Image (cartoon, rainbow, N blue to C red; front, top):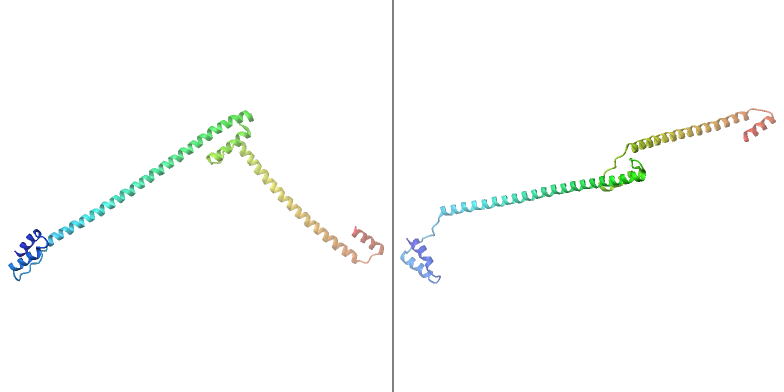
Length: 209
């Protein structure tokens, strides 16, 4: 009863009247100490509700983060696909322009070089257009492949001839050296034998000739 009277009437007084009211309660219930009521069930329920709210907020934050990441990934994929399509369209346009320019150059080459083949003007212009516009190597015609093959064969033959000439020159130098050494040995043998004075003089003249 003391706790009920105190808790129900405490909120009705101003701050100056609270000590007077507490002294009256103490006079009515001398020697009794009423502690504040502890509502443990309510506190536990509030704690559970607070934990549930906290978990729900964390879950919502995780879902929002996942949605944001998913949206950014989708945007990146869309931009990547758009860029790839744009590059493909640019490449197709470049190929189309190269084909048109090649056709025009071929017509001009037919007028300038004569014949349907187009001549060297067509080949030169077509190679320049393909190299600088598209970035792919120009296609070689059958005549160009044949000329390249012949040039490679001639270069190989020239290398083989140069190698054989070097080998022959080396052999000639070796034979000349052997000849000189043989002459020196022969003259040394002839000079060692006793001969008449006139024959020795003749040999010396032949040696220095």
